[in-house]
Length: 208
Image 1 (tube, rainbow, N blue to C red):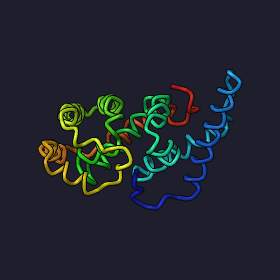
Image 2: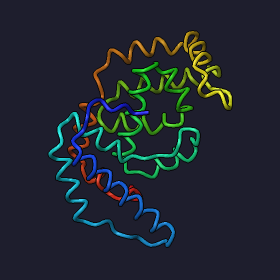
Image 3: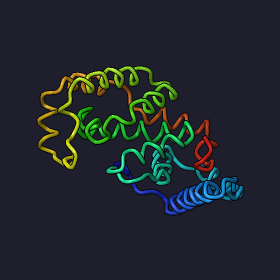
């Protein structure tokens, strides 16, 4: 769902991916035994150093690699996983999905593909990074979405692009798309937040 803009340095990808796997494994292990299992502090420190050295263009993509969620056809599981992350990880994932979907097909595509399940978390994330105008547009878009049932795909028709196109053409969300397009990109705000809160992006996945 999230598109990688450019190729990443292999050492950065490997380190962050291994860290994500270690954090995830520790979280699953601790949940099975109902007791915490610490992540190797040296791995966390190494990941932090690499994040500090990463360019702005690399930083988001590196972290998004580690945000592994269930298949989009399992929305309830996906939402449950994302809710369990730190505020920073929730912000990164939900606002990146929001921006990516809107750039690709407008708010209509965003609501069609996500079923609107991330609206609250994305709204919180936008305010977290200091993007109140984006948050306001998201709320207005959500109000419209709730009034337009055609934007909710029928079971088994999530991939029906023709149905989506018809719903989008008739939707009042097009005016919100135009307003959103005039706002500044979110990436600089996300990167600024990430650099100021690296602990939220190197913590185990069961730490909020």
